[in-house]
Structures are given as C-alpha cells and as structure tokens.
Length: 101
Image (cartoon, rainbow, N blue to C red; front, side, top):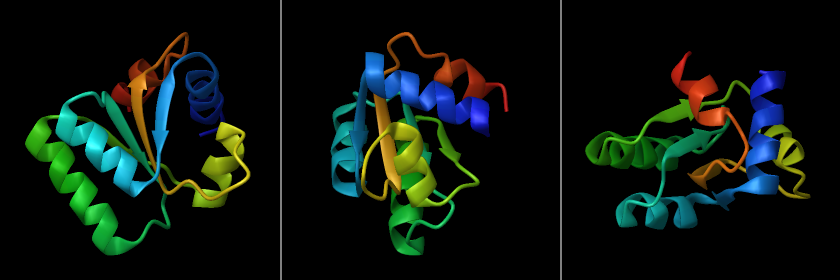
C-alpha cells in the first residue's frame, strides 16, 4: 500500500489527477480518466455510482485500503480525498502497479 501511495504522489506531482466525486464523475463521462482510486471509507452511494460509471466506461478502479485522510496525505493535500481520477500518470507507474493487483 505504501508503494502505491508513493506512486500516487508521483502521479500528482508529474501528471494530472482530479480530486473529488464530481470531478472524477466528469472525467469518467468525458473519457479522460484512465484509473479511479476510491478510499476505503467513501460514502456507500457515491462509491457505488462511481464504480458503476467505471464499469460502463471500461475504466479500472481500485479501492484503496486506506481512509480519505490517508489518501489526501499521500497526495500532499490538506483535505480528505475520497475519490481521485488519474487522467495522466506522468512519470508514475501507478497504472501498472494497480493493474497487477
């Protein structure tokens, strides 16, 4: 999990990552999103909606076994991150790391 957290931080620093439910939904619907990360303590209804959108669009999603506070910390953000949509991984290997699990 720590390695995935480091790769997520690298994606934030070198690529393009969208935070929040609404922004992630928009990214999925536009087809820009390559991977969705969901916190373990995300709201149930919102999590089900995002997962359904991902399945419909054929976008992989990964439920992090961490809280939104932990994911926010990994991303270097001073707020809770329950949903993150990766549009461009940059120099990160988070896409390969998540797909291998």
